[in-house]
Length: 281
Image (cartoon, rainbow, N blue to C red; front, top):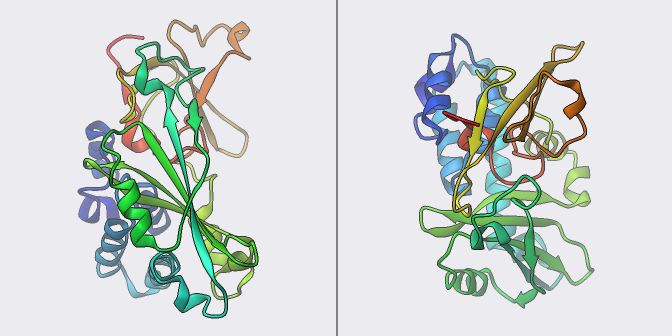
């Protein structure tokens, strides 16, 4: 069954990839979970979509979705009500603000598209103070990283806030080692944080492609190199405009890794949302 066809109407921003996933014959529960986790929407909406999805799948597949829903609810408790989780410790929130330099120039290249100007951390005692501070930012050129810091010095959770629908929303979380070791959460945290999930793409080797993230003044265009290894895993790399991917001498040039759900593997932007075909490259 293709679960995306029935439960994925809002999850992929790129219309051509949305249609591709709508028309697939089969899409697994694990793929659907990965699409929801990677979607460019707030944690609250991700959880809402996860709950809707759970209602429509066979009983034998419900367990993994239930565990993911429980993890999301635990995230909210850690972020908004940490005293309930750490009653014996004091804590504060450290807020880091990165400004993407590509917002300020149309000289967007493979080399500078992810460059940021980093600011020193600002500390707050409550999440309400954090949200009030970040709410003063009205441009899409920032990425906020917020750490929950316990008085022991450990960081059990930190999260990223990006500009979604004209305001900054929490869209990704990461967990500290203590949470990862807890038997209750270990496996599902590994699933949530797995960087190496690969989306299925309809694009071909040599296609002209582009992406334009919210902070980019214009799209960045290039040519797609695609190759399948001996285990059947696809690798997809976007090379600079004008690269001849049929000429082996190009290898070693700058590229953006599009092999996994996250653009360049470690960003907070999904390949499914932002990578698209281009009329020229």
